[in-house]
Length: 126
Image (cartoon, rainbow, N blue to C red):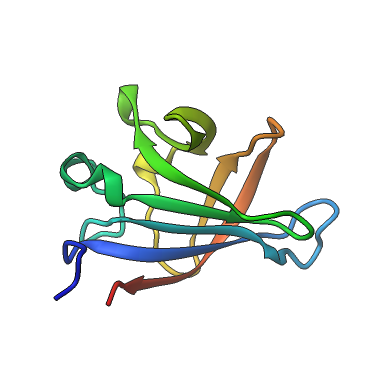
């Protein structure tokens, strides 16, 4: 039996095409474990009951991975925290996004810049 509720998914994001990365970058992205509703949106109600299970791994070339948590804040906004629950990065309109393969989502990273990522894979957890 899985330790995660059935709504939880592993979401794999990779950097989309942008200046400096005309082909995108498969080595720069995020792995997110979070609950999704049937339409592919983040499920805030399910998050409330299982927030300790909502994890994020940020990976970048030539850097150690950052491991953090997915936070839900005021106004329905979503954040990523790597230290002590302090928001470090923010999902741009994550509350409206559909996390389905082929879609694009944006994250304001710790450098203050907004980068676009392509949803490469969404799978159920074993």
